[in-house]
Length: 221
Ligand code: GRF
Image (cartoon, rainbow, N blue to C red; front, top):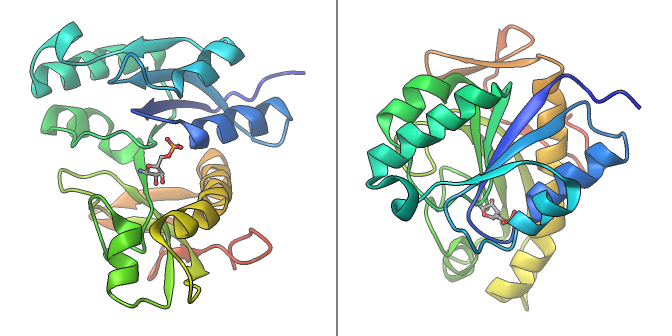
């Protein structure tokens, strides 16, 4: 089987279940893209096992390997420049990225976040949604800017909050749906359908007024 040409670099810090979904979906021939490299800022990130298992090269870049935050971002840019990915995905990468990294990759770098942004940037989104009495929660994918979980929104998926939900039950239900959002969004990127320009999202060259919403059949309306 010929591997798709469209290549993705994935940055992780932890479990890497989204990375695993990308790898598995690609291995099944259901993703028009391939994961070409993984970068982790934690050498013990469990998600690295998914890269190891699939024979995907990975690089650890953190304080110990590279120094301060800007130096680490320079090292990341250098690594990515060597790999030349079409798309960079921050997938549970627990670091705010600095200007040099954004200057180099901003137009082709997305982040996934477990809330309906602009609600609840940062941590603990499930608890915060429950405490606010929200009736729905969800996940978002956006282009990366210097702000925390900020930047033009590409896509979202929504799930209802149930009366007995706890942060962990909500997280457990959202996880697999967030994986589907990632796959559907990567398909759009690999087809060359999404760009960002002047803080806006262009879909097929037209300004997207609202983020795309993933429907229950896991397609965008
Ligand atoms: C996801 O919920 C993502 O939105 C957030 O971190 C989580 C990563 O999960 N940024 P995993 O490491 O892919 O399992």
